[in-house]
Length: 408
Image 1 (cartoon, rainbow, N blue to C red):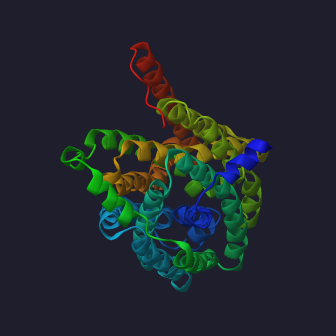
Image 2: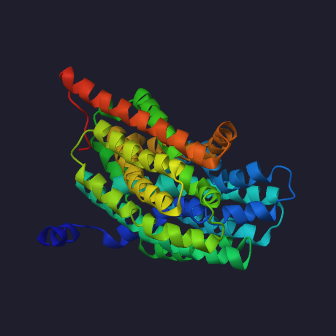
């Protein structure tokens, strides 16, 4: 108990930290809120010849926008500061998020979702850069841990609201995006700009050689590739989970929400595991979350009953709680301060291109295996193979006597 008190006692910049935790959920909110609604939206557009492909792509369109624009967002954040771009992006997140509630054309809805994604690109880049700017290594891990703890509670609330909202009206889920205006007001009140002064002081103290530290291209290429794969697997359930429930016989959005709410809390367990693995190598952390996440997908793919499906979901959600903090912390420790905005922008591009590509990959795997569950099973095997590769990399480095990278 004393360790818990000590943990909360050492937290600094608490109002800013809480706002960052909530803000970091907004890009995930845009997807989590949609999964109970996806089958109903497909049914609404049943007369559209390509609804089965286009509706999931509409849901994940923000991911494509982030993938295309997050690097640009990183340049904006490095050039103009963190807070002002974040404020504007959060405001327009609310505007574009609510827009589909008033639209009935599928292509116009896709357009508004794409614009939502540009706002998300700035939000996720600025928020992750602020985490690195406000706190040193231990503080970063503490707030990333709290972000992981908060995620399941926020996700459970959103899922519980999304199902009933969809039953009231097929596009009722989009009205929930109005929460962004409350977050905007809190940002306006509490967030301050730490980067400009800190960055200026850092530049003034640097030697010419330090100031010319090159951008770590090779490192970011490796991080980007791993992040792309991890994201595509991470979003398999988040986007296509409602279709798996339908195959197992659960068709009502509110029932899907009920069955998913408790397992979503296991994201918190994953966040705790991430914190416990904080001193392990990056390869161990990556291997652990790939294995846990994709074991859950594999079980869901093989499930022949609702209890088995929910059991797989519990494991998958535990892995989901490990994945994002692992990837963000890994990236933050590998990118120099003067390139941090750009580095997090590239990370966000890769992560959300994975979000956009995930439903397309699931649809292709569904065609090959003849079911969404078959697609989940294949995704599970791919992720477990990635976990094995990560563990081989870890033990290979140890066998050669090379230092194993850790999160400092």
